[in-house]
Amino acid sequence: GIGKGYTGGYHEYFGPDADIDSHIYLMLANDLIHSVCPSAITVGEDVSGMPTLCRPVEDGGFGFDYRLAMAIPDMFIKMLKEQSDDSWDMGHICHTLTNRRWMERVVAYAESHDQ
Image (tube, rainbow, N blue to C red):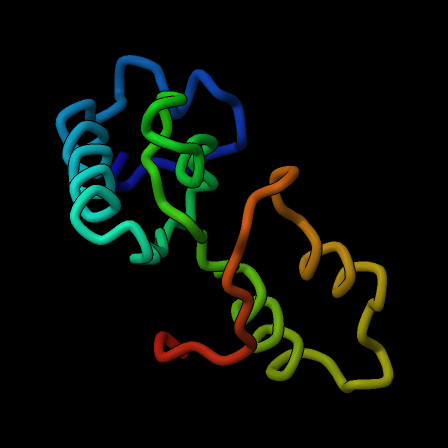
């Protein structure tokens, strides 16, 4: 959902507001990519936390191999702008660096072209 805020409930991702056509397109695109070039790697850029982004298509997922860990650069730019480094909350940093679904592969990065 464009313009929709997500809180993490599965009903938000798979409810009546879901754009099923876009879901199917991404599933087909990833299936085609991996069929034509099995060694290809696809990375999903998603800020909503879509639950099945990195699940295989045959399991009903979108089929991406990795998810961009987009919260990491957002966290660092906010901390750099708003806090002195001696007041950084290490627990928050560790949580942000490790917050992902079990067994989900991510591409973590600390700098973003968006900032």
